[in-house]
Image (cartoon, rainbow, N blue to C red; front, side):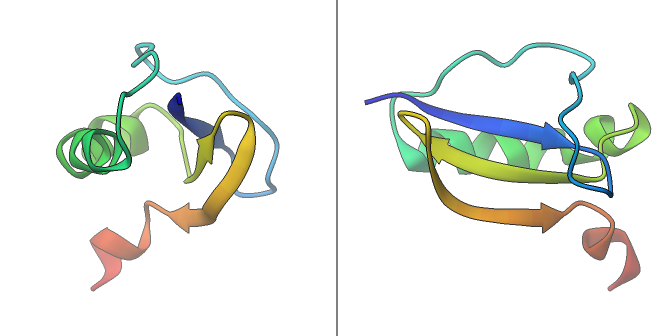
Length: 70
């Protein structure tokens, strides 16, 4: 199984992250990575992310802005 993030603009269109994270071996690895890197993604123009497992949506989109607004 491959876990990966889809990086999106606010309108849901796909965009490229500042650096490619590749695939993750577990959901926990993917979630830990996003928890550490989200400020860099937000600064790089990413508005939201969606978690994918083998091409299927697990959850999202999840706004990166809400972490700042709280």
